[in-house]
Image (cartoon, rainbow, N blue to C red):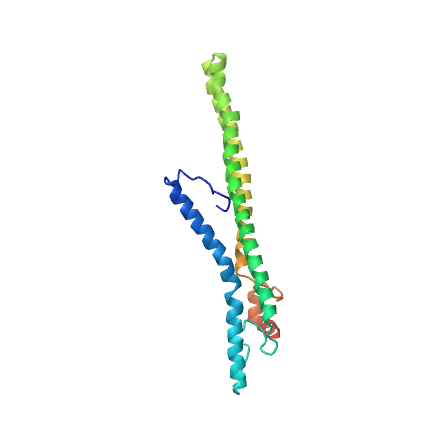
Length: 211
């Protein structure tokens, strides 16, 4: 969709002009989202800082609540802008990378389809036509049984076994790495695995208080 002219999905959209309009609209919306991620947050934090600065001048007690972890006494607009630019770039590149990663599952489905065709054409079909080729109908039945056994074995071990395991591992990695990276930020906090033993002993609360 980002390429000039996009792609023709005539089997989905009968009206090519409608398809192009929808694709163009989605691309424009995606491009508009980039400055929306980049600009509003620094402005909002700056306005909150100015408001707290005004409150401090009037003698009110202020804190850093609402400044997303930025200290009120050391508030730097340039630092916030640089941080937001880096976050925006990371999110955009991550989105493209995640999309490309999910295409691996699509590639696996294509490989699955091609292997199924190869097994059918190279194992089962030749065995079935062997009798007709030699002019002995009995060989077709014997060849069909042997070919079916070979085809079934290859299908179970390769397609249902290896391919399914490969797809499962890819899907697990995608959910763990790509999907959860959109929500989890370590922020320098050491990972502590969940255990009932620590919770019941009270060590988990002590570690949280230390952090």
